[in-house]
Amino acid sequence: MNIRIVNLKKQYHDKVILDDLSLTISSGEMVGLVGPNGVGKTTLIRTIFNLDTDYRGDVYFGDLSNRDERVFRNVSLMHENRILYPQLSAYDHLKFLAEVHKKSESRIEEVADQVGIESYLHQKTGTFSLGMKQHLLIGMAILNEPKCLVLDEPFNGLDPTSIVSFKEQLKEMNAQGVTILLSSHLLSLVQDLTSQVYFLKEGKLEMQKIHQGERQGYTLYLSHPELLQPFLAEQNYRYEWMDGGVHFVGDLTKVINHLTKKGLEIEDLQVDRISLEQVYKEYYSVGVGDGISIE
Image 1 (cartoon, rainbow, N blue to C red):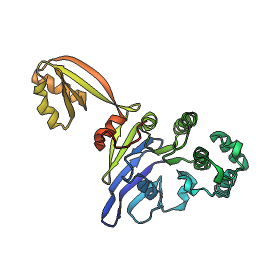
Image 2 (spheres, rainbow, N blue to C red):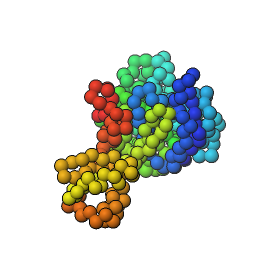
Image 3 (cartoon, rainbow, N blue to C red):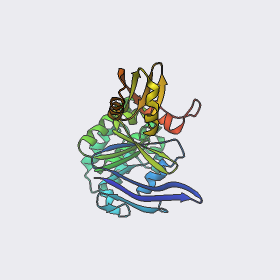
């Protein structure tokens, strides 16, 4: 099931939060959404689900508008733990959803086992730790066996073992064709799970292609590297001078063709990788002490 966002705009008073966004996430993709606190990620997710209703534009899950309650038969949003009722047990929450989605008792047992909450299934959520609540929220999100799953900070409170297990579950669901939109501050996890990431900044989205969590860069060594500068600047490549060479991120083929036309000989070429963390720092101009989570 694909997600299609068309000319989405939302603002609070004079501040534009979402500035005429348009985006299509194809069926079966796992896509990341990142950005600093306060940039509007949660607002975007809530708007996608029509939970924040004061906006302009349209959102579709497959052929259905987000304003059509039938979307929730096949779409699921992992909420924050404030939605949990402290006086109710984990079982009570799952039972309610099972009745809404016409799922059997066996589905509740299957989900409880899958997310590891069977030992406290009948315990009231008011006594839960953060990690226990997070496990329950995961279970609630997957109970209806969604074709599209949107997750907002799903790894909060999870210990390393639970993170590894949940990552494998997400990969398995995605391999089965489930479309997944993942928003998290944990860039290394986004990097590991997704093939492309959207950065949200000043109400706009910019896509970054991530090949197995990384984007490729190159260092070229030339007899006269300074002769390459006008081309790199003209093509808007990000580059920096090295000792006897130039490091850049962009289309290598274009650079090679340009050098060939100019008769410039390549002395050496090194291929490296740029992590999502590095791209994030560059895009948001993050420095020491800015307080982002990159682990």
